[in-house]
Image (cartoon, rainbow, N blue to C red; front, top):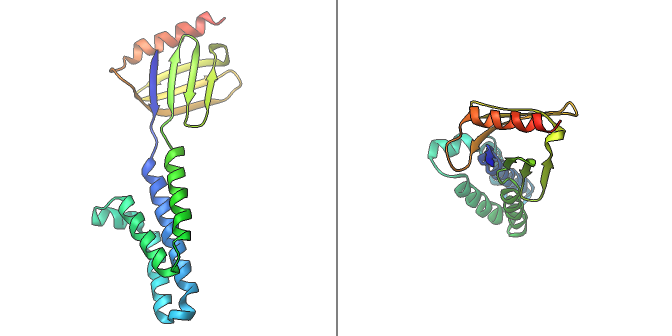
Length: 176
């Protein structure tokens, strides 16, 4: 059996959530500007700038997205004087972290199985027309004229691409 992990970019999910928290904090600051005056408007404009440039700020200050998330939560709680907005966004972040786990692909003599956190898709060899692994790129051509292409890392031992491609070719020939 061959197992792969499809490469994903998890850090983008964190950055999106951090941007959302700073944007909500900016909106709250603008709403509070009636109470705080020009200070609320300046804070809102600053928070919008932070939400736009959060990735550059994170790289420049060499801090993690999680630290920025905590800073955004504290600012949001301070501006709104309520932890509920921040709590909803933190729950959203936790849900996103859970749902964006790496997809595992298992390939064996029974077929190809894509395993995700909440579901699993199984394709038998008769549903597949061609499978190729080349330079870490797994290409699967299905019989229904669809195809998928993903950058993958093999799980466990180093993978011999030639042996893998030969295994898939053999499986495809025996399905007929």
